[in-house]
Length: 298
Ligand code: NAD
Image (cartoon, rainbow, N blue to C red; front, side):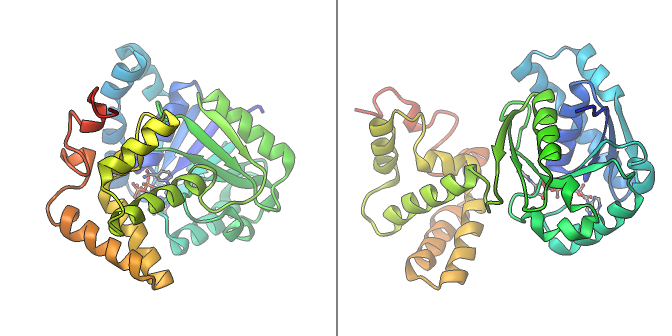
């Protein structure tokens, strides 16, 4: 891997984190977004990362500034990718936005440029043809708060060339991630293939009134030694996201138990403003949730 110049397309929640982390680790980063207004917001988002880097990584003011100086900002795609070795796409999770983006990118990017998508739910094979260079395209999926939740799931689609997959694995390590290879395309990657069914199973025990949230968590924690149970995890994910996932499932399957779960999450949690850790209450009350008390596991 001889990557020097990286372009991050889309500078929202994840794009701004990816751009800064990449610059912080010494790469030149071009940030692309659709308007100067969006770019101004990105600069603000990136500046707001500073206290987190200081607290979590012990970053100094100087180190943060040096990282920031390696960023440049563009609202013209051709200029943003002019010298790019790699383009990391983090634009909205909407097929109708991503497909035309890749069609244009494929035309304006140099021949050498690799493309990766950070999409959480859309598969790279959906966009491989639109890129015009399927062999140089794959997924590189980060987690929110990438400076500390540093997983990078690197996933092929059937047309990805092995050498390019290897380059992206190496790049992910170079920016401080733990690179996790997925040799085959898998909806949900590794993490969500495990996590979503696990959380569903816990929520169904609750809605069927088999047991209560704290008892379910306690069972999991004692039996496996895990530091958190499924409902504590749901509080971190956020009840709104959990609700959206369950609602999609209720519509897709028509199953009564999912419909009841939608209703439960809405009336008992969302309508009462209990949206999880961020709002101070979900299945637990924060900042001192019951599952962290020393008697919880007794
Ligand atoms: P976001 O809505 O915060 O940001 C999207 C950005 O893309 C905005 O700045 C927007 O102006 C810009 N944009 C819109 N259309 C564009 C276009 N045509 N070209 C360039 N930029 C455009 O979204 P996000 O949460 O950062 O998610 C982005 C991608 O990252 C999605 O594919 C999502 O699945 C994935 N992802 C998100 C998270 C998360 O926790 N938010 C985690 C992992 C992966």
